[in-house]
Length: 219
Image (cartoon, rainbow, N blue to C red; front, side):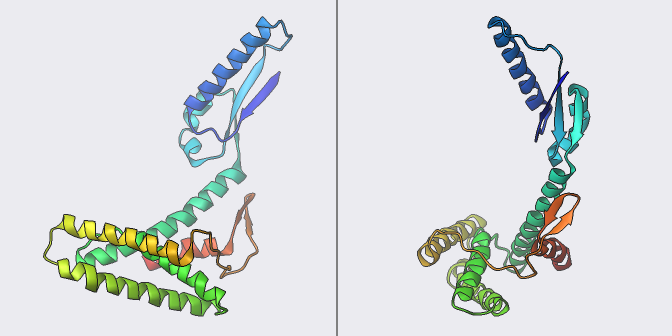
């Protein structure tokens, strides 16, 4: 009996489509009078969080189920790392809104300025800690300029006007960044080691661990 395993399946629709493809191939083989076996077991590999949520439905429709623990843990660790970063960005939204009652649609650009400025300072030969401090100062100065030159003069304007202003600032900062730092990918050295940590077959970089542990502390 032949067993076929479908990797990275997220829902039953993908499994049904796979069965349809197998059925079509069987018809083609039969039409061409090519000998082939009739017994074929189709299984799924549960390797994503979406598949875990729908594992009951997958188990009912699949002939067998295999849990790919290493890939599943890798997805979870990546989600925790990115989620922690997004949580810090969202914290910036909340702080700015509570202080100025303005929804800052340029928040992502300020994160970009901090990262790109850090890379630029490191390229000049400065150590990483000092580069981070200087980049934070630069981003703060840009934020202060935004407040004094764009937001404060329009303090009595409507919410829609303030939103349009921050969107305009976002486009301006994005264009300026492309002019100053170009469009290439800039990397930063690891600030907490380069040796990955093995966990259930997955790997976790030390700086990723720092990201999703420091985020709750900041919140």
